[in-house]
Image (cartoon, rainbow, N blue to C red; front, side, top):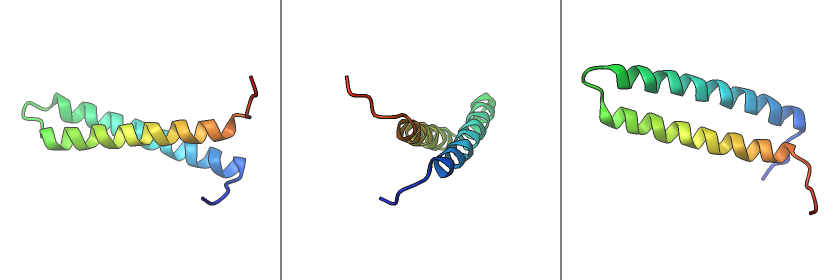
Length: 68
């Protein structure tokens, strides 16, 4: 895997958090529809979860290793 600088990680985190929020809005509006497309809802949830996992992975890269 390529090595990322802390600045690159922070920029990527910012972009992912923005996209995660956008997915949240899309998901909420889709679920409010009377005839919500269940396949679209499932895809939005899956994408949102993938974004959350990537955000967590990048945030862990910013934390220093602590030897307990």
